[in-house]
Image (cartoon, rainbow, N blue to C red; front, top):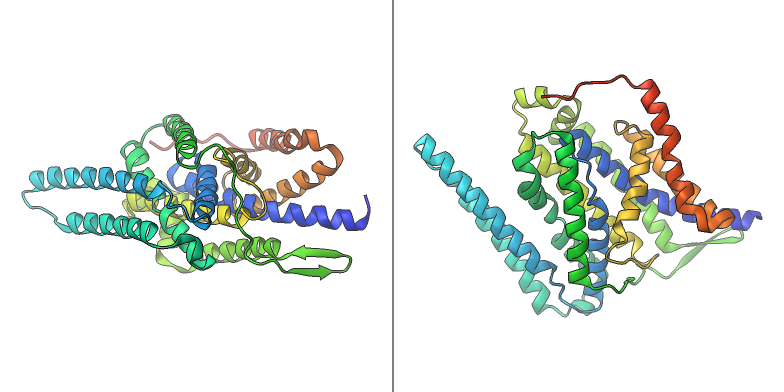
Length: 350
């Protein structure tokens, strides 16, 4: 291996590691706030990438109709809850009706845009925004439908539901996008020379957007009231609840952020690699390794661990490409052993 090959491998490692770091942070965020290990995080990546590819091909994806069906179920459940609560209290809170109308109207506008615009001809930024507008609402809706009713259940129950949701979303991905893989056009075709090595502009996009997202997450959690509320929930769920922080709000907010990060990650890596309907699981599993390195508690360590996973994967491709996945996932064993020997057991909060 010479210096030029090492730099190229390092470039691939940092690029992949930046995506794994974003997924590790979103998995960690959801777990600390809701105790849910978000197994379907990778499906948000593939949904984002394949939806962007479908839009660039000029095909109005059926994802919009799936979103409409879930929104209608979500609204029906909320209105039923409003009716039961109002009947017991003797007075109706009609704010839920207004909120349901907004959600249905938003989805209807998306469907109109999907079927009236010439999708392949709109600017790439508009294609990316339309993709995010389609995929991100799935996060809070899935939390509302599948996790909110069992939010206080045992962690094992939440994990089983999360695995079931992952399997269902992989099947839905096959139904909506088909078995063929897809790759999108790069944001820019230009490159930059760093000595003897040329850096692809898409690689710089991935790294810069990842850094910007991490900084925005830091500012959101350190400087905003909602961010501090989520941090309080992560530190002590019962105490946060006693202070008036809604666990429903915390759950929906974290799922929204995780879905946004997943879909944006898919849009970023779609020009670099071909993604299939079932590619998301392996990608999110590598983010999960980073989260485990961070002990499912430390955001900076998880981000650094995820970048290390990307570097190990890149250099493993050179030295032992057939065993790169084995090498990456073996990384988790020493950290699990170290954590099991150094962490004290804490009873789960009732």
